[in-house]
Length: 147
Length: 443
Image (cartoon, rainbow over all chains, first blue to last red; front, side, top):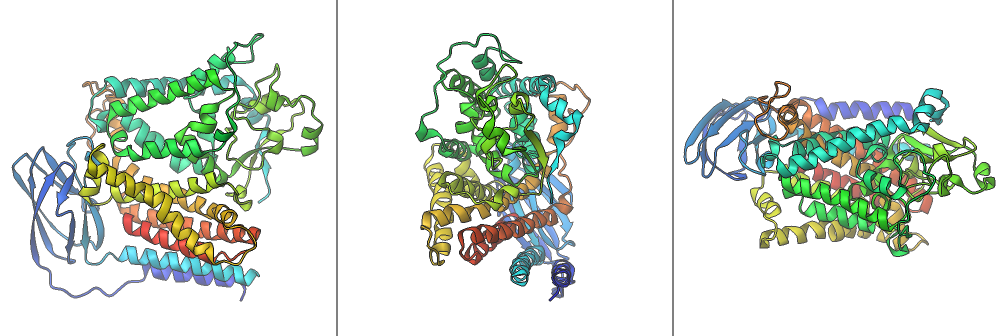
């Protein structure tokens, strides 16, 4: 096969893997309330999983100093004083995996006080694995063609 | 891609030959370095508001790993302020060679240390304490001071830049990754070097100093140990030194045969993976263990850290190449094929740093106005609020970096395997597996 044609094929396959729409599971949106503790320098629970469209309420209890919670991608945040609970509600309408992190300087390891929320399934991760595999197949095939 | 000689441009050549432009940059860097030390030692203990943490571990690191190393190789070493005071003391001059040089010990570094094992150890020492180092200003101040004085001390005992060449924890990985950069310093005509009397590029002359990096430019085949200090351009009486633009990773066509360099590739690959999990992951228990130095949890963390780097990653790599048919000894196959991990390791660091830097870059504005955290507002940005940048493109950018690194490494593995005449498939599969783990850690 012409090497340029196979390169084009792999690029197109890569675009399909990266961007092709996937079926979205039809799970009725729910209201979820999550009670979360914040301490230097971790959240508990630190990994959340919700369905697309859920209304998520996080009740953040700070157990030591002032902590915050900022959700990447959603750009929403709250702050909780020591011993107090703060509440954040948002609709999880963007699928994927997002980091949430403390947005109030709370001590040395503050920049690394991080949790993770997955809305629906973490499709980008699976797409990335697909891209990596496709890339390797492409490299091996193109080399065999040259040989 | 054919090489393009940048030093054909009279402007570039004159800038390289003259000591003044480099001195101007050196002075700015040295002032910044000393200020970072002072900020670390006397400034606010809040890391995210202290110049030393924000400018060293966010701003400098971003420039180093995202721009300087991939595009300019050892470009940072060319302007690094750390060896300067020691070098000036050693030379007895700041600019051109003096009439009479001071009498320091000027010893040659013992042969057993003429490799990068000490740099591997110094990097790992910092890496094991990195959670404290990256977040605690006075620790950063102490480490920066220690590096400055270590460089001065070694300059008074050993010849040339012994610190840069054999001890600097940063210089080791910059050297490793400088092989992928599209820039190089090389001679133009080997015969001229063969016939050259006195070899002033290595031994020095009135025009300049002998290579501070203990490299004879006539034999230079890789970027790894050339610090781009430009001294040989000044000393070469035959105008036989060139700075070339070349294709990326040109040096990797010739795989390394050295175990210290092979392990450097594993150290860097493993450290990026561990940092991605510990610092950017959601697991508080790992962060606690990494931060609480001296506790039993930290010792467990240190053991796991070192095991991943020295046992698990190289162990699986060895298992992969063990059954490849080759007349070469396993050690040589290991060292040669580990070359393939260099582009992947660099892109692991790029992907890790993108997340870390884009999230924390907004601290730069505040630290610029109030570098010591003393309530100043020099540029009116002291109260700039923290805001992560470009989070929507972060995951695609990380995928692009990691998959790009994987392709790059797979191609490098094929070339390295061709050189030693064995199959590249085990190394390519290994690269795919570690890339998948890194994707899982970051996404």
